[in-house]
Amino acid sequence: MMSNENTLSRRGLFMKMGILFNGIVATALAVPLVRFLLSSITRGRANAYLSWVSLGSVSEFPEGETRLATFRSPYVTPTDGKTIDTACWVRRVAGDQFQVFAVNCAHLGCPVRWFPQSGLFMCPCHGGAYYRDGSRASGPPERGLFEYPYKVENGLVTIQAGELPTPGSPTASLLGKKPPCAV
Image (cartoon, rainbow, N blue to C red):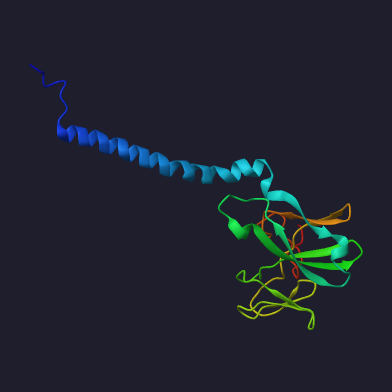
């Protein structure tokens, strides 16, 4: 004869299976969420956001001209696809002096186009316009185009990529605005 202590009722079996299944689902959902929350800490320490990326040789950018260049974002995941190819505008002022602008309008982020005939960057979304040096010309943007930090080494123009230059980032350069006076 079997004792009642060792038998498992049908309700008890389904209850334990439900708890087990919910635990597995919770773990499966928690792992990517925790990885996402900790990624800025782990990648920030590895300086993945502040990698220097080559745009090409200095000779590819004639003096006084502005050209579109693309670079591969140093911060990629396997599911990024074509979005890892990022565009920027490169203006060679003179010699090894460059300006590298983010392609996004400072208003709402629409991609700006360069019009050499007028010497203006134009935003098609809301009519924002910027001068050749990236400063604000007209329209809704309150500031100039954002610039990437750049350097020239061994005949190559490189930019500090991975982090989009915006007002909140430490690498932001706000054109057309003077820095506040130190007190």
